Image 1: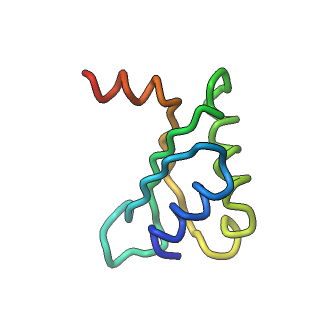
Image 2: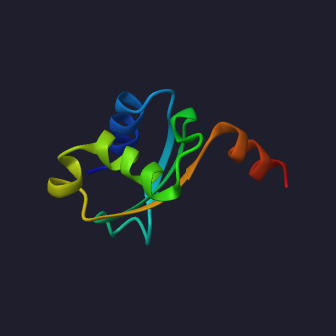
Amino acid sequence: MKPAAVEDVIESNLEDADATVTHARDEGDEDHLAATVISPVFDGLPLVQQHQEVYDALGDHMTTDIHALELSTYTPEEYDDLEGE
């Protein structure tokens, strides 16, 4: 699955999400992806539940189209703080 398609699925299925997906290793390794996902849905959730929200948004793609997904999840406030450092 192409990174842009993964971004679209996440953003379509996770409320107010902004997703950036890249190849985790290099362009030739399409099986390993890395995603940074920003959404207010993550507010107050532990990291494991934040990741579960992304997996739920991806649905069957996690078992059929995506071999590995490295996740970084943030609320908008956390991401703004990170960018401000």
